[in-house]
Length: 193
Image 1 (tube, rainbow, N blue to C red):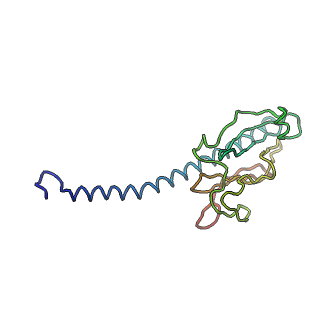
Image 2 (image 1 turned 135 degrees about the vertical axis):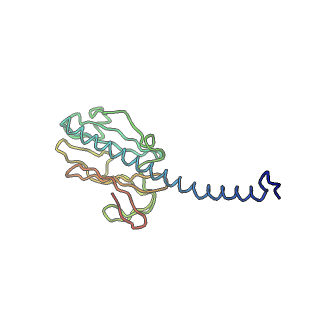
Image 3 (image 1 turned 45 degrees about the vertical axis):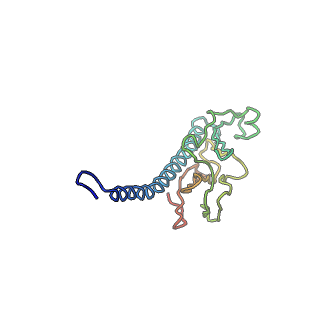
């Protein structure tokens, strides 16, 4: 009962219950949106690094490569230039012949929890089925994605994602060195730009 000066206990309980229900509804939506935005930022950052390597290659008139390494669920990104005219090679990097152009960068420092990974069952951009946990680096038997001064590059696909949330792919077209970012639509099972 109220005496006109305050709320009854039942009113407080109902109002509190409504607040808890609204919070329970909002938290997963906000969490999903954050995963989506972080994944987009991470994919766009990585695509930007590839474009940077492509432009550096044209500017320097020598091959430039992006080395991508997944170490403990983190992705290391580093650019290297060809130091002896035979392309950027891991053995030349190890010997100091192909110098780094910038310090090591970590993808998850640009977009939290984002790495090269496949976090769900998807259809590969080329049509093959891929499962969660499969190799996200699809550029052959190397961790180097190279760009030549003639405009061509290594071709392939890089898969970028958080532990949960949307799956993104970065396609690199070898003949032109063009880079394209795509998002997987789980409902239609199609890749969308």
